[in-house]
Image (cartoon, rainbow, N blue to C red; front, top):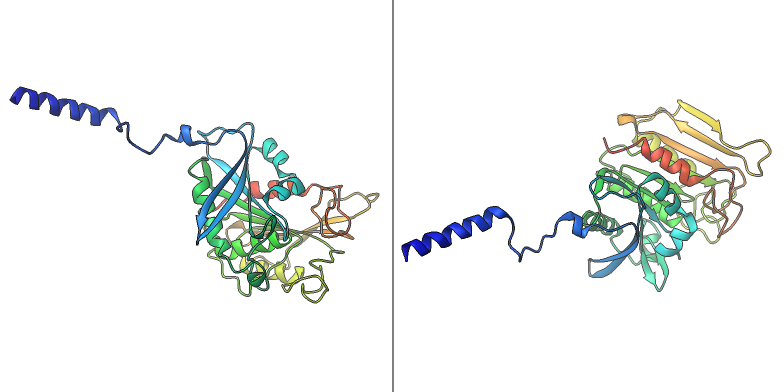
Length: 314
């Protein structure tokens, strides 16, 4: 019997040294990794079942840490329509980043973000900051995420949500690119400076360029473009006098586009404003879906990724 016990102990020890038992529920990353293509995932957050779409580029290597770009839809849109609207998947395949399209809350496919201000009531006050945090946690279980290169861009209400993420999740969001949306939250207290590139048309009727949103019929309360830029120039400790303006368009183009860069502030965080003269509530480089003209002579997707590449988390 003594010999049997000793033999049994040896077998047990050998089994432990050989690796996890068959009943171990932690699969290797390779078996959990998402393959190239489009995927939908869902997760519970504060009693609600939330969801998001993931586009994994063709050249994705699960053994390499990969940057992530969140693309937040506008009001009354959803993840699927945002993917079609902005066309970011093409850039993701070209540049090799993961494109993620979260869904806001609402009825059917008409969804909103709680970006602060009036949107707290419109979106029925979900904690969308918490949702994005848990989304990133969930994504990291199936994608080899480069945690220093997680970015956010968004359209309109989604752009406003980007500003909220910069203010409240600056420890995880490396940089943001709001398009046709301004600051909606009452207060911005980020943990660190956040690089920002903002796109806006001067003829935007939904989120007006020069008038605070809410003073125009059909628009919502919020800061002006100038106020939003000034806020982050100050927060990032940029020199407001160190302003460099570059013309991105050609004289013969229908819509003239300028890029105004404020000198890099603390930790190299810069603020950039891309102005589309006569542009409407649109995504530059894409055909207009909402109101007004779109600048087809530039690509917001190209400029956004060019900016993001320069600004990982410090």
